[in-house]
Image 1 (tube, rainbow, N blue to C red):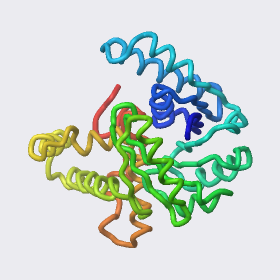
Image 2 (cartoon, rainbow, N blue to C red; image 1 turned 180 degrees about the vertical axis):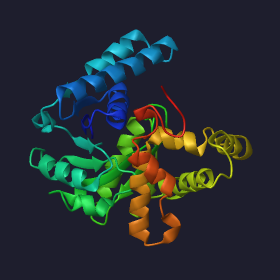
Image 3 (cartoon, helix red, strand yellow; image 1 turned 30 degrees about the vertical axis):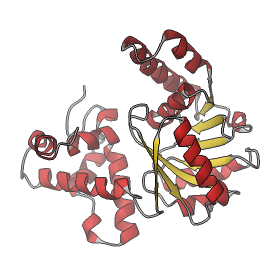
Image 4 (cartoon, rainbow, N blue to C red; image 1 turned 60 degrees about the horizontal axis):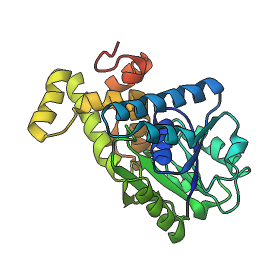
Length: 282
């Protein structure tokens, strides 16, 4: 049974995963490369929990208990005793491989390892570890405390026992799990990201304004958020990385990233996290 969870990365995804695990009663160790990054992650969790208390969705006592279950540190050696470690670093294959290789030397032999990737091959990442049979993809969705889905992706080497333990973990933290094949983008992003990319093409070609495209999809297709606003939430750099994985993985021009997407990333307009993307967030 998984009772202690380690999380590598205190950014948007990492601190969200840490929050839901701790709220579910699990012991959490959240690690990042600097004390500043760790402190920022803890501050974000505290603010998120405070909003839940203000909305009367959580008591002050439960908030304090949740925070008390989180150990935040820049010392990765503190992950040694974790039953499960989830890598939640930036969507960059080279970086993830390096983290996973370094990580496995410090973990207990029976520990599970997961990666929170939205597009990178689980089989390839598993091969960088010393436990490919105990490695699985766990694709959380942003914002993690709100979104109900957890997409589980098994690599070629992933054992049935690992999948079963991951499904039990998903249930423990209040997520609904679906299992997807190891293919670029898995199930959800295979459908979602090309749709967003097509919306960017539509904007680039002047078919409609950003506001009109988003209103059309919200009011005409009943989407809760428009594709361009969603791209800003995801991060345009992440969107570009995913589309580049699709383009190279499928060798199919229909997955070509929109030139406007590339240009906006080059300009540093990455969406909400940079203050501007298709919309301004200053």
